[in-house]
Amino acid sequence: MYGTIRESPKTAELVDQLSRRGFFGVGAAAAAAILAGCSMSSDAADAADAADAGEQRQVINALGTTTISGKPERIVVASDFTDLEFLLSLGVHPVAYGNTGAWDRGVLPWQSAAGIADLESFDTAGEINPEIIARYSPDLIIGMKTYLEPAAEKLSRIAPVVALDWTTSWRDGIATVAQAAFVDEAATAAIARTDALIADTAASLNGLGGKAIMIGSMYGDQLYVQGDASAPGVLLRELGLNYRGYNADQMAALSMEQAGVLAPADILLSLASDPEATARLENFAVFQNLPAVKARAYAPVELLLSNAFVDNFGPLSAPYALPQLAELLTGLAAGQGKQLA
Image (cartoon, rainbow, N blue to C red):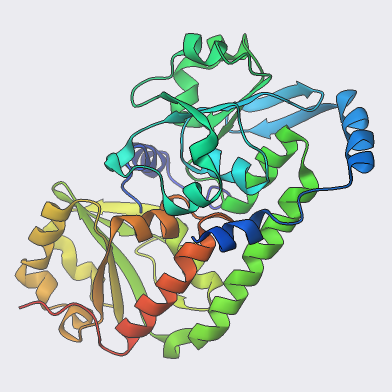
């Protein structure tokens, strides 16, 4: 979800389709730390609420510009991706959220730590049903563009609608959600805490000796190679690492026979969302002979870490993702990766 960097329409469509299927891939104490500092004294809160009640905001989002009059009190979130997680990271609980059932993964650990079990949910595995959302009498609807867009006109008759793109950066996404929910200071704090975690992780990795990192993953019958503008590419560079994208886009869809494009990698990751396809790739001779694979600097990234590291990265997932990612990359740099034939 990194949308301020350029993308081709074709790639953006591909990202939409794969993200909806969960392709990309915390302890309670960590979650508490993420949510800390979002409270204020009752007197200050009452004064702020009174001021917010008369404020009108124009929120620029993935569906255009949305007018919100007064601080929302009943927010419905359309899915359980970053639309939900960004709101939770701001210390705001929606009255209900859409349960997509993506990959049958259930509730993610960092979502659980943020109190998702206390929230009401509705099934949104298929298209959004405006009638279901209307039952919650929302005064704000937040969701991913691909979920909201087909029903945007009907939903806008219920309440103001604010959408995020899959390619929206996590910082921009949180800022947008915070603006819509009238909790801007909480966004500043959440971003600062996450940036501090990124900086600490970068210091622990110390550049990994400048080793080039690439990400290539089989899904179905295609090899998806992450580009410079991809979510993991941007994050790995922020960690001070030498990430090498296939191109300037989000990602490229290639055939397995083109696996040789991964040869420049000293460290190679694969987002193993499709186990059968990943096994085919690992059994493919061209892949097995890649320098990183032969040097045992290759690893498939299991679905949960893939979600935390790529699809759902943000203040909630960062305490879960970053330590595991650092450990994985450090091991790969030392040649402790998966041994193939």
